[in-house]
Length: 195
Image (cartoon, rainbow, N blue to C red; front, top):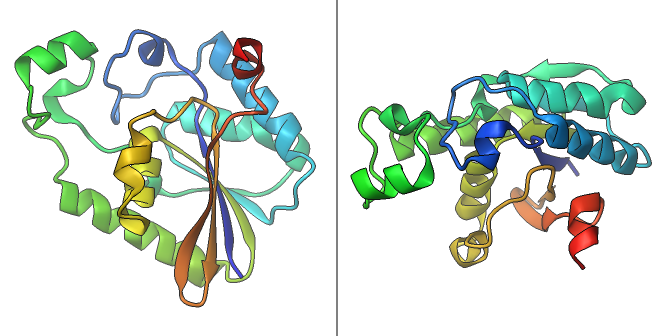
């Protein structure tokens, strides 16, 4: 059985300002680095065969910090890069909502193309690393889209938003990907402080 653990990258300043990042390369901020360290410490107890990372710097930096204890090969895969949001990249939430209330952004990556590359990425992992446990460091829209493709009820769940540094699990069972965990945050100290 192939297992995927999908981790959303740590926080960036643009996350904090609610700016649309997309494929704009924004580094982790100090909170993001702390989230990555907390992922590292939590995931160190688990058994993985390799790490797959989006090539964007915030994902690669998160993967590198997590790998300080796992000491695994890191493979970059463009298939797991964040969706390109066209002219909306760099805009704060209020401006996006005002200018594009239907959330259709000029020059954005078409939804079907985005889905297709994620399907290709999942297939590549399953074909290249069958029956292995793979840690994938990616992005919010990437994880949302993967889960939406696998579960028609996911859109309702996704309204809560994926936390930076959250952990999600997929298992390939009897020919299909099954969701085994979504938006898990108990390992993050800022989440536990709010409880």
